[in-house]
Length: 227
Length: 227
DNA sequence: ATTCCAAATATTTTCGAAAATATTTATTGC
DNA sequence: GCAATAAATATTTTCGAAAATATTTGGAAT
Figure 1 (cartoon, rainbow over the protein chains, first blue to last red):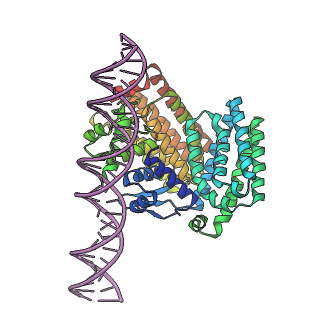
Figure 2: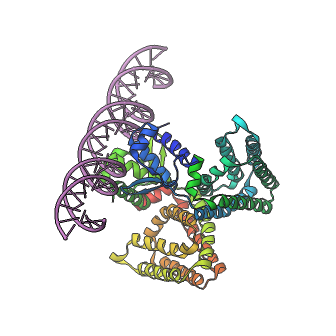
Figure 3: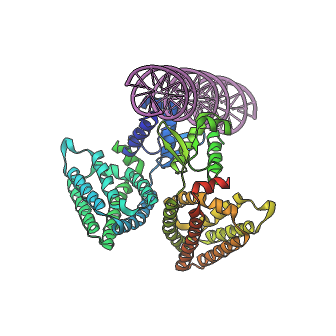
């Protein structure tokens, strides 16, 4: 793994987690000290993150952690619903046994992690398995562009979800677990209408929850507090 | 404008135009000579283009112009139809007078260029105005993510269209002109069903035309020949 | 006190060379 | 001849410093 790739992973992690809060200037000299490498790999990582809209860039004036906004969250959630509903319908139409098996296995791994408390309760493992489950539902859609946009939107909304996850209660976890189970069931039964309805409800519920949390404070305060 | 930005523009132009054909290795030393600059700005540009899927990158093994494939073209066109149809409906619902005026003006500028022959017939001006017209239809949708994906997909399909444009006849241009006119008319009349139907037909026609052209030759041959 | 300007400082951008890695060529042993 | 290995070459990646640009500081004039 090159230094540039390490820098990308580390910066992405720290931004999504909120250790580098929205709006914070990302100066090369600071980052060079923080991550112990030269400017070149850092610039490369920052440019990648800029393309993903996780950092802003202004010519000759450096990089910053991209701001959060409720409007952007709503937009991302709405577009996600459209794109993922189409993708889920296509997957249900085209998916084979391997696809179905992948969903079962991803759901199982996710539920193991949702149930965990104490030292095994690792939010990053949980987040990775949550992502893997949602991706598993869509992989059979046979559209690389759709999957790419899914990944972009997932990353964009992840930043908003992390503070909530860090503060989430155990009972809320069980709710989400039930929703994932029902979504997987409808999908495996090839009931596209039901599955897309559940998917949309799942996202709208999450979005309204996030809006409530972010509504009272400015997003950057919330995210900063999570770090 | 920084050197990195110039490198980005120049490389993008040369890739889309096909002067740098699909699959061609993009070696730093070659590019350094071609564009007369050091490695740093070139790497930056290549990374940006990699994020846009216009170049491929393999760790420690350099960059190449991304290949073309008919499958990818079909995927891009299908996703475009979905995303742009939704965006057009939203624009029709939300658009104000400025939006409508923007469509009229973009269509006028485009038609001026479609009609031109001889020294004024500049394919890049035509392409820019074609882009501007299609974007004008969607700008009122109030969804930054949708517009970003529109731009990504437009760039992806542009590479396939350029060889055809370079070889296109004048009569084919008049067909397309009529389609654009009808599309603008339905949109300005706020007839969402008709407008999206026309949009879909427009793209499917273009796609099948491109498939015919690319079907006989390998895509890289076609694009290479266009340069 | 405030505005303007210049000097000083900080930061980004670019270069040129060194280090790390990949690829090709040459050589040896079979 | 052919495979395996080593040397030579080519290429990417990274660094450290120089150049270019932005920002802050300090002081002079009004």
